[in-house]
Image (tube, rainbow, N blue to C red):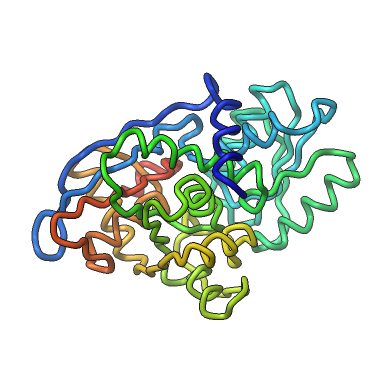
Length: 306
């Protein structure tokens, strides 16, 4: 996975994905205000950064494929459904039984067929692979696929234009597609710090073990349903670039999301607030004079939860 792949993705996505803005501000930290640059990626089509990767993958695929299948706990399904609808393709999303209704409803709204299977993303993924073979459909991986990673990496190219200097970039890990894309785009020119929920420290566990490993932790929130194993592409890039991973508590993530709504009237989902939670909880302490970039990556949530 190279920076050139990300540049190709950017050209391919021109006019299809939004260049999301950056908001320079200060947020409450454990010892007072902390200057940050918020990348407002939740303003992307479908309310998720994953639309970039989904569109790039489908545009790069064989034009003869008219049906796509993906396994998802939520946002990847929304993204692929939206991308498929835009390109005139049929879409089937296989979701675990505990997938949030808000996200399933969004998949339906974009015309996707939604099938429930299993209690985990891993089980849904196995069914998606089988289903794609049975139907002769194209299978997209939610995060561990070169074209998906390259699409997400376009965010990194935008940040180079939007933020001066080389401040660190804090970003939620999930399955690793976003950190992998940023790593491919930025290389070692900027430090990328992966922020994980304490119940699924997939990147930390992989870096400690020297290879991707399964993490069995569970969250009380279905919104924090995510992969329990880091993708191979993300692990390779994180290891080569010596990325740092930090874990934050679910309560800190929930508090960061509530703060964004109270102070800025910004609505994000829990995973979308994870990177900010690292700053506000003190898990990440900026160096003197540093203004870190915080990526707010998704907004598919139930409003009453705020």
